[in-house]
Length: 76
Image 1 (cartoon, rainbow, N blue to C red):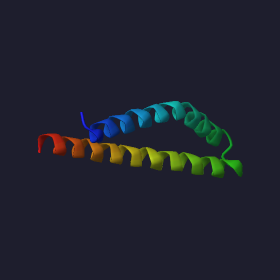
Image 2: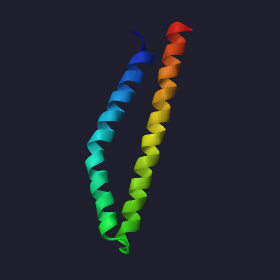
Image 3: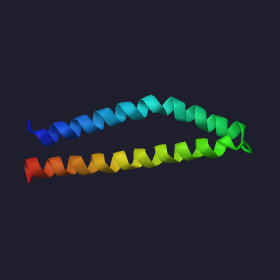
Protein backbone atom coordinates (compact mmCIF):
# COMPACT_ATOMS: atom_id res chain seq x y z
CA UNK A 1 0.00 0.00 0.00
CA UNK A 2 1.22 3.43 -0.78
CA UNK A 3 1.57 6.51 1.39
CA UNK A 4 -1.58 8.26 0.14
CA UNK A 5 -3.76 5.36 1.25
CA UNK A 6 -2.18 5.33 4.71
CA UNK A 7 -2.59 9.09 5.05
CA UNK A 8 -6.25 8.80 4.06
CA UNK A 9 -6.96 5.95 6.48
CA UNK A 10 -5.07 7.66 9.30
CA UNK A 11 -6.79 11.01 8.71
CA UNK A 12 -10.25 9.43 8.76
CA UNK A 13 -9.63 7.25 11.82
CA UNK A 14 -7.90 9.94 13.89
CA UNK A 15 -10.54 12.51 12.95
CA UNK A 16 -13.34 10.11 13.84
CA UNK A 17 -11.77 9.31 17.23
CA UNK A 18 -11.37 13.02 17.99
CA UNK A 19 -14.97 13.76 17.01
CA UNK A 20 -16.37 10.93 19.11
CA UNK A 21 -14.28 11.95 22.11
CA UNK A 22 -15.48 15.57 21.86
CA UNK A 23 -19.14 14.69 21.32
CA UNK A 24 -20.06 14.38 25.01
CA UNK A 25 -18.47 17.74 25.82
CA UNK A 26 -20.41 19.42 23.03
CA UNK A 27 -23.65 17.89 24.29
CA UNK A 28 -23.03 19.32 27.74
CA UNK A 29 -22.23 22.75 26.23
CA UNK A 30 -25.53 22.70 24.33
CA UNK A 31 -27.35 21.80 27.56
CA UNK A 32 -25.58 24.69 29.31
CA UNK A 33 -26.69 27.11 26.60
CA UNK A 34 -30.28 25.87 26.81
CA UNK A 35 -30.28 26.34 30.58
CA UNK A 36 -28.59 29.77 30.56
CA UNK A 37 -30.01 31.53 27.52
CA UNK A 38 -29.41 35.08 28.78
CA UNK A 39 -25.95 34.42 30.24
CA UNK A 40 -22.90 36.20 28.76
CA UNK A 41 -20.89 32.98 28.91
CA UNK A 42 -23.43 31.31 26.59
CA UNK A 43 -22.12 33.42 23.72
CA UNK A 44 -18.58 32.11 24.18
CA UNK A 45 -19.85 28.55 24.51
CA UNK A 46 -21.96 28.95 21.38
CA UNK A 47 -18.92 30.15 19.44
CA UNK A 48 -16.97 27.04 20.46
CA UNK A 49 -19.84 24.84 19.30
CA UNK A 50 -19.99 26.67 15.99
CA UNK A 51 -16.23 26.18 15.51
CA UNK A 52 -16.65 22.48 16.31
CA UNK A 53 -19.38 22.18 13.67
CA UNK A 54 -17.23 23.99 11.08
CA UNK A 55 -14.21 21.81 11.82
CA UNK A 56 -16.35 18.66 11.62
CA UNK A 57 -17.66 19.77 8.25
CA UNK A 58 -14.14 20.54 7.00
CA UNK A 59 -12.92 17.15 8.22
CA UNK A 60 -15.74 15.44 6.33
CA UNK A 61 -15.04 17.33 3.11
CA UNK A 62 -11.30 16.65 3.27
CA UNK A 63 -12.00 12.97 4.03
CA UNK A 64 -14.25 12.66 0.99
CA UNK A 65 -11.65 14.40 -1.18
CA UNK A 66 -8.91 12.03 0.05
CA UNK A 67 -11.06 8.94 -0.59
CA UNK A 68 -11.89 10.09 -4.12
CA UNK A 69 -8.22 10.93 -4.75
CA UNK A 70 -7.19 7.47 -3.48
CA UNK A 71 -9.65 5.71 -5.76
CA UNK A 72 -8.57 7.87 -8.68
CA UNK A 73 -4.91 6.97 -8.14
CA UNK A 74 -5.52 3.25 -7.66
CA UNK A 75 -8.16 2.61 -10.32
CA UNK A 76 -7.68 5.49 -12.73
